[in-house]
Image (cartoon, rainbow, N blue to C red):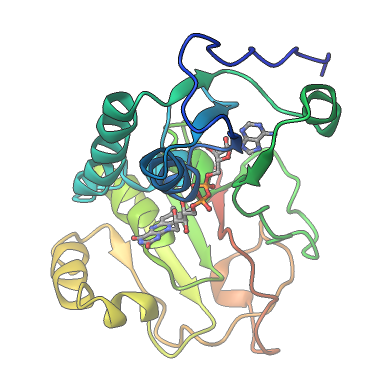
Length: 243
Ligand SMILES: Cc1cc2nc3c(=O)[nH]c(=O)nc-3n(C[C@H](O)[C@H](O)[C@H](O)COP(=O)(O)OP(=O)(O)OC[C@H]3O[C@@H](n4cnc5c(N)ncnc54)[C@H](O)[C@@H]3O)c2cc1C
């Protein structure tokens, strides 16, 4: 990616004189910007995407999860009132920061995605995708989808629900004793199960803990127990081609 000169801070509005550059406008970067502005710093926030919100904006695309976006809307309006400079569409590099020499730099660039299905032969086949791409609205091929849940998190279950809502027949495979472990902590598990069990198109294999990382294009029922796969920050979805 070619170097992009940082947009210089708005010189007409010095606060305490201390410039704080924040890289990344997910919830961490937005809240850091709000706090620094309240402490009278001159805050300049950079985000590589076109919009603010980071991963929360993606998570909020899941069915019934739109209210997550409220935290981003709130923080954005706070930053506008506090006079924080917001620059979207700028991918910041170390060279850019070194050239500008700001007083303080806060790196709030989020987490990198884990390897997910990478050890499994077939992970790179064209009909294999992942939760982020599904939530972002990328089409998934074929009427039948196998979701391999490596995280038991909200995101993968949102993807399951989203796929079922669009008419896919979904089979969820997990190394856990039951699907949706993380939802138990937030008391969302009952509601989620009521919603997905109401859909005939979502199926949980009878022994969901029995699967091994073999070939993602094999039938689910041929996967046999060999322990859990590596956990990762992103689950993977194997979309089987129509027979
Ligand atoms: C599908 C899904 C569902 C989730 N559901 C929940 C939930 O229900 N509850 C919950 O608490 N958490 C949930 N999470 C986790 C939550 O989204 C993250 O913990 C949170 O977004 C982390 O915030 P962050 O600001 O650290 O990073 P991010 O939200 O990832 O933001 C980082 C930002 O930095 C930007 N960036 C990166 N590099 C650069 C660069 N070089 N220059 C400029 N900008 C850059 C990125 O574009 C991004 O906007 C979910 C995550 C996923 C994936």
